[in-house]
Length: 248
Image (cartoon, rainbow, N blue to C red; front, side, top):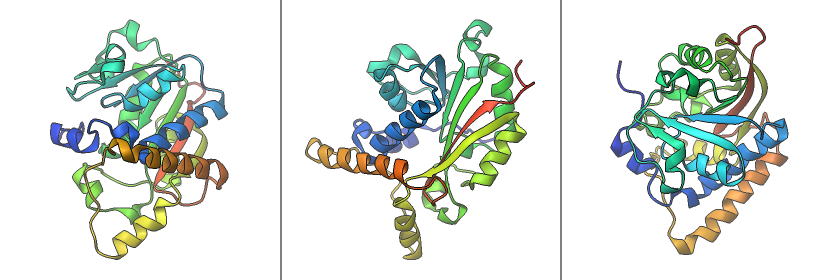
């Protein structure tokens, strides 16, 4: 089976230094935080599986969430969170005492890379016996499939129904599902309709552009809180819990 973790080129393109100031990252961080707060899930210990260099983890820890990260690829974590991130490690291979610690799992744009997401989710559920809370994000809408998905090794883009179906099959119970990045959906459709390709390099804005990216990010976060969850967006989020009788 081909590797599912990013290689060094993909990490360099997707997570260049300063990418945390990009509007997309600014918005997603705030949307995730609001989702956890709305659900009353800002307590307990969390693990972000597939955390990359720890960009989301850094944001959440700065706001008081107790979260650690595990990344399969042997990349270098951000210095600010290096003590809270393990890289080059499969979370399911951690010592039992470590796997028993978290009560929540973050899977942020991870399962779209996997040929069998249900088997992966079941393995996670069985390996992390204390976990009851799950927050999963994925790229949305199959009609938005592009060169970007192919470059980064995506197996699929999701509908809400397929995401919930896979979580349920893995022994989880979906609680709330919503699209986000609504305004990017028509923009993506227009781009695809024009025959142009998406850029695969994520821009880290220079210092003089950061206020603009901050404002755009806040706008997308506000959009997510105001528009209906079912309105199309380029990303999907589902909060779920381990189904009754599924805890190990």
